[in-house]
Length: 251
Image 1 (cartoon, rainbow, N blue to C red):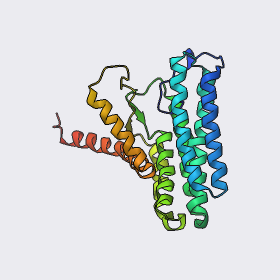
Image 2: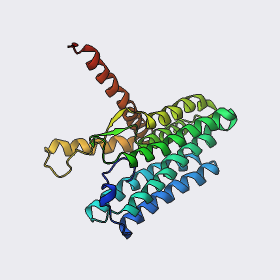
Image 3: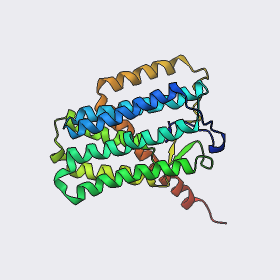
Image 4: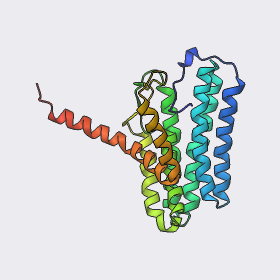
């Protein structure tokens, strides 16, 4: 995936070929983002929110498939970035605008644009700094996680029978928070050093099974809380670093 969840080759090492399998997944993610936009315009906001989550899953698969099949390419990376902009930039901002911001006038489209612009800037910075950043952390909130926070909020509010009119001020705060977090310099753990091939105790498999049971017990609430906590984790890391700096003795 171009933005955040997967490693990409340095610009000068990427092949220029076009490979079918990873680009099929990228196209599927792009279609899910486009579908989310169409459903938001048709007033089917829950379908739109779910489609954004589906796009996130597909976007997480294409990079992994490309690495496993050794079909990484410069075309695939750039195509993936454009797909991310649609699925995690335009779709969530339009969903929020159609659901909650329409009656807010300029404030509504301004809040939606902050999020959309934040996604574009986040993607551009990620592509420009791909060879220089610490692989253990993302610089700024990853755009799929930001989209999950925005879409998850809409989904959980609808699931609890709250309208956009009732939730609009919370929606404004959350949307601007997600947009600003994407362009911040805060560190967010990337999970890229997590080794999927190493052996683990049996209890880990049980915990993973319980985790999936928890998600399926109430998908809107669990997914929103999961990604919202991740969005807050960058601020927690910043506070911990700040405390260390202020508490360390000066020499």
